[in-house]
Length: 291
Ligand SMILES: [Zn+2]
Image (cartoon, rainbow, N blue to C red; front, top):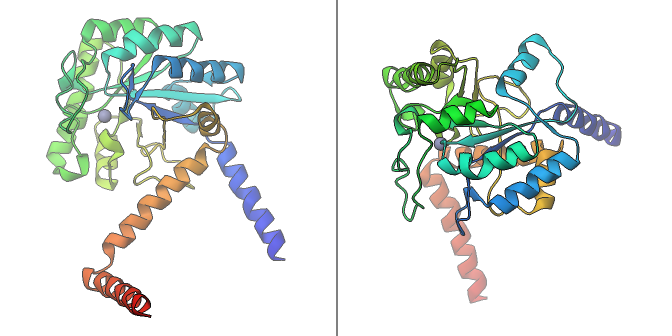
């Protein structure tokens, strides 16, 4: 009986993960050793070659949106490629490779940081680079690529009040639409950070869907305003990439969601209880040592 239940459960999980479209999250494509967020052009080309060889088709957020809302069919091995922040090397290094393999990608643009140094990233030892300027964004679009919004200033949205959030979301959309003369219907939350309030305000600002990463997403449910993404880092061997674009990509996302939930519950425990657990553990160690 238990075995039968396990088989049914595994079947349901398989059914669930098999219909998900993998959405990959990249940042920079350049030769910067030891930067987690930068995939080298050689590695990126190997990944595109893999996708081509295995019959994947790159789709847009609009295609995915129509699939969800109008049930329009998608190619059997659909995949979405996204680049956060709009770095210039996406145009210089990624675009020629995307064109070579007849693929398309979406870049997520911070409207106050168009054609500038990446100074919103204030962490230590950040590699300096520029973001695409307006002419480069137009070139990106002309080459058949896509653009989505990534707020005005790249803040942690849940830390802001409603008015500030609405400004970050609506002004970015209006500004990009005004400068690029295309509808900007899709949003990408900075740091994959959002809550229910942010989702409601994103709808209010006129977006049709929004990309998260794993934080706050639901493993079992497809929600257009918390689309899950798989992170592709510079330390990605090709075999792991192959798993991340297969049906098993949901396992990677599921593990990140689980890890995040565990941390959340751990943080909810009162510090005194944590201290008691650790002091007990410490005492035991002490006694064992004395034995
Ligand atoms: Zn970002």
